[in-house]
Image (cartoon, rainbow, N blue to C red):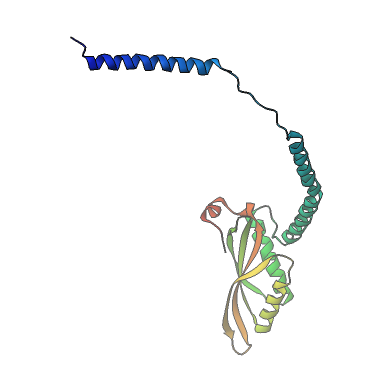
Amino acid sequence: MEITARERRSLAWLGVSLVLSAAWYFIQSSGSSTPIVSASVDSAALDERRLAKLRDTAATVPQKEDILKSVSADLAKREAGLIAGETAQQAQAQLLQILHRLCDSQQIPLKSFELLGIAPLGDDYGQVTVAVQIECHIEQLVNLLSDLSAQPQLLTTSDLQVQAANPKEKTVNVRLAISGVTARRLVPEKSQKKGSGV
């Protein structure tokens, strides 16, 4: 096998390029192996700016603590209206007791009641609901609803159905469902997974 003139020239150029590449590599690597790092001229000024910023932030801490105390007190005052109870049944019983007391004050006898359960109300609260059947005069119903809105607990009428009962005595049959706000921990797990209530 013979090497042609063209192939010899190619091999010669390859050898020359390898020698030049090796020389370039050694020149570059034999120079300074550690880079020169210059000291920061404005490090003291930068530190002073950081210190001033930290002082400004620290000066706002007492104000933020005062705001937190104020908001916490406001939340505690608002949550004082929650229907209390260790269990959902206790919360329902307390709501039923409030309804019973209000009906007694208006001299309205309870025919029957129904515990409608507890459901999520947003992300932080639960909603407990109780319904009652009563027969009363219309002015007694109006007074009952007025008394209900004056209660310190967070209560609302979630269902109100009124039908004529006795035209001679001018009474009406009423199905009244009342909902109260309670702690989220009282909501059963399966209700929490369904999503929010109301």
